[in-house]
Length: 319
Image (tube, helix red, strand yellow):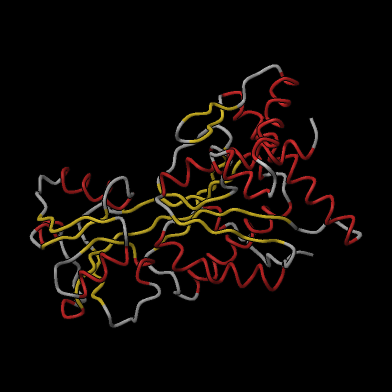
């Protein structure tokens, strides 16, 4: 088993297809298939299940994939250290962000990485909180922001903050007075679709209060929700961060007074990423940027937790 075989195998697992991996790696498909056969013969175990919908790792294949990612990352960082004559953050870091969080965090993080750690490439994947946490567990993402997460194998959780959900309506509905749950239930609502964490919390809160909702439409796309609200079709329920890139006067964003519509936000770190200098640098940058955003009110409606209030979030620039 060598470095090249591990790189080939990891790419097949990530693309879930030998054909797609062969194209990405610029090698012939029969040659790539033979590498897999040789690897399975050497290890004495079946690593992939091939079918009409592609190639998926077996349980043994998942174990190999996790170890392969650690080895490949260490090799990348070793090359960079030799090239620079010292340990430097380098390599590819895959970060998952829910859409609302991405609106606040993605651009500042990309600017930081480009300016301060140019040997690191950050790949940002947007998706639902639950899906992103699953990808971290499978070691297909290095880090992600996730809501109301539970501890899982091969994943480290860092609690960040609690985030309030708010009623968001047309600009004409702006008010300094919070809405009650009953008042929100009486509104025509456009809501995120399951398994979005906002929708789960919303349904739980209204069921607990014995209130029925007037649902006009459901969608997983925040941009569609906001467009429908802007067009006067109704209201929605979102965190303030979902409005971070909108004009301040574009929507009414009204607190909900008598509810527990609060979600806990975590940073999830893959086990294979915890020894990576590049991933640690990006993790520290995320924590620092969140502290800055909260302090300057670029991120509102949040209450920091211990990992952000301990005073240890200093300058995230590499030394």
